[in-house]
Amino acid sequence: MLIIVCGLLVVTVGVPIATGSDTYTVLTRSMEPGLPPGTLLVVRPTAAADLHIGDVVTYQLQSGKPDVVTHRIVRVEASSDGTRRYVTRGDANAVADASPVRAEQVRGRVWYAVPGIGWLAIVKNSTSLQPWLVGIGALLVLYSLVSIVSWVRKRRHESDGPLRHRETYLPL
Image (tube, rainbow, N blue to C red; front, side, top):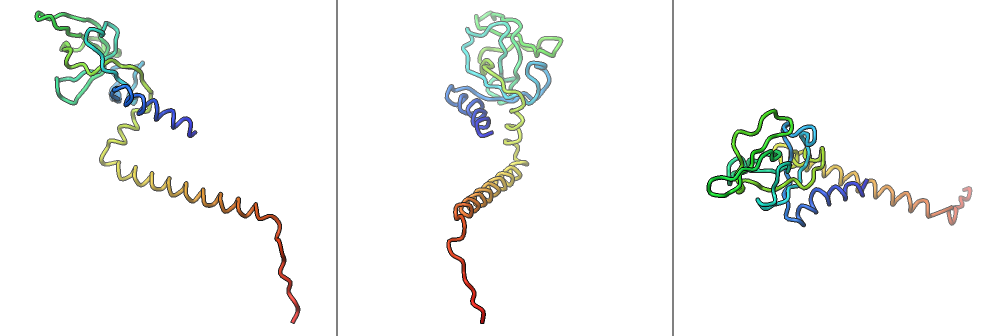
């Protein structure tokens, strides 16, 4: 179990930090079935010239604003000033997104995805749930400490072996 938890931490926290990638959580069904809601996405910054049709990208709805969308590039267009624009569409959507995406809006290409783990990030970032998470964490630490103390006491008792001496009672 510990190996699984450590592996998940490496994949969801360590690798993104080490590579300068960002993590996002899929919130809608627009990319189903490949990226269902709750999927954690690791998105690598990618140069505009390296983005192609078929790439799944995360982009800002408005340049400089925090709201993002993750959709697939279905067409690449060149604007009159020579910059690239990307027409995107969610895999579950019938039509392409209304507005083409400019290169400066693109946060990066999806590098890999971990289904189901994104819900943990949502819960962790929810201010109304944080006191509960702290409480649950404290209870888990307390439970662990009690278990360790109990185990140590049991081991000590087992290592004592048979009684070394017996008290002798004399009748009065």
